[in-house]
Length: 81
Image (cartoon, rainbow, N blue to C red; front, side, top):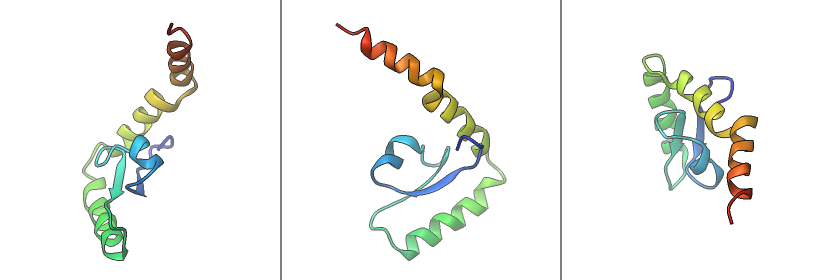
């Protein structure tokens, strides 16, 4: 996402926190299987060229996972009573 490239990931664990489904990539719903993967890839191919997804990816990473975002979040946590 940092390079402006949307991701396709399984809808479990870390991707649920980092990927905004339909905005910065696509999450494959459970149960995970070949059909769900194929449908998600087809949807991605159809919609990517017409979307702002690439811009959304870079913005999402900068706002949430950059050094500046990390330090801001850490300062907030450390300064809490």
